[in-house]
Amino acid sequence: KAGVTQTPRYLIKTRGQQVTLSCSPISGHRSVSWYQQTPGQGLQFLFEYFSETQRNKGNFPGRFSGRQFSNSRSEMNVSTLELGDSALYLCASSPRRTAIQETQYFGPGTRLLVL
Amino acid sequence: EDQVTQSPEALRLQEGESSSLNCSYTVSGLRGLFWYRQDPGKGPEFLFTLYSAGEEKEKERLKATLTKKESFLHITAPKPEDSATYLCAVQAGNTDKLIFGTGTRLQVFP
View: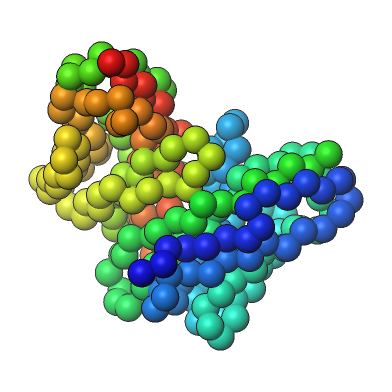
C-alpha cells in the first residue's frame, strides 16, 4: 500500500508570494491533518480535514488555509508569505473509521524556504 | 493547557548501552499517546500507540510503556541505525490533533 505522498518536496518562494502544497493520503484514509515543523517550535498542528470539512484548526493566522477534495486529497495554501513561514510542512492521514483514536501516518513533507 | 515534555533533549549512547527516553504529559482526557521516529529530512515514522495506563508495546529493540503521567521508550542494546529523533505526541479531549513534544535526539556510536 502506498504511503502518504506530498508534492512538491522542496519549494523556494519570496516574501509576499503565496504557495499551495498538496497531499495524497493513504488509500482508504479519509482524514488528513497538516503540521508545521520548525527547529524552534517543533511540530505544530495546523488543521484537520475529514469528508471535505475542516474539523479542527490550530493557532495559526488566517493566511494559512486548506481544503479537502472528494477523493480525500488535500491542499494547504499560505498567502503573503513571511520569512517565518520557512518550515517543513507535514501531512498525515488516518482512516477515521471509528470514534476510537486511530494512528496518523505522515508523509515525507514539503520543505518551504521563504527568502 | 495541554502540554508534552520530552527528556533528555539529546542522548549519546555506545552501541549496546541500553537507556530510556521520557515523555511526560499534562492533558485533559488522554485519548492516545503516540511514539514516532524521525530521521533527518523525513516525515515522522509511526512506532507505537498506547491508550491506557499500564499498557506496554514492543518492537524489536524498542519497548514503550505508559503511566497516568508519563511514557517511557526503552531502547535495549541499541545499534547505530537506531540513531534518530524520537517524538512523543498525545491526543486529548474531543480533538484529533496531535500535541507533540520537542523530541529526543538519539545518537548511537559503534
